[in-house]
Length: 289
Image (cartoon, rainbow, N blue to C red; front, side):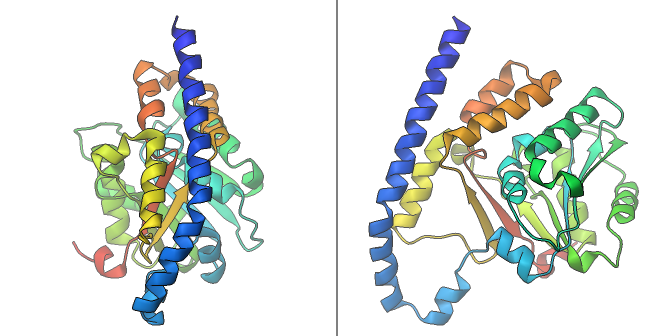
């Protein structure tokens, strides 16, 4: 019976994902008209300010050599950053020397091994420059980390001379799930890595976070009304159901120890596998204590 429910759910996902793809394609005509109308009412300067960032272009323009993900736990990379990793997997840039996933908990555990396998699957095109480091800070929703020890660990991996060429990606102040470890990643990076290119994964509003593939309709509607990502944001949108299946397959095969029943609820309800946003943390915000 459970398998039958799963098959039905999969068919529904496929159907609605195809429908969203068609809606997105059809929306290009009115989107052009909306943009054309906006061109008359906005100056060229204001339009330029509102152009959203593009990951590959940003890496090329800023001569980024290292991309560092700072996460709290094994499976954070697949549950929250899957679209970002898959996008980076397809980047072709000979100047890129290192993609480094730093996980601050669960060293030398089964989850450590699962994280390595997952990263190798998600970044199979970049495996020659992939590095995964795992540390053994406490995994807890209530106990705080030793910030000085975390900072010392991160500074060993991101030296002062590398920072101007390093793109750091971590959680935002809400940590997506409000997990203390996630929020701590952001606070430490914000306070101490203001000379790097720091981006934070934006926590969606509750209704949007659990809107599943319906987030795509929301994205399309925003575009129809000419509402685009801000100039300090990189948006990743997935209209392909195959990518959802690929990510879930990686989770099931690489993070077997974590595939309990409520994980399935997450994969069917969360929107981050369909659409997510990285926000560039400005130096003004980074230096606030």
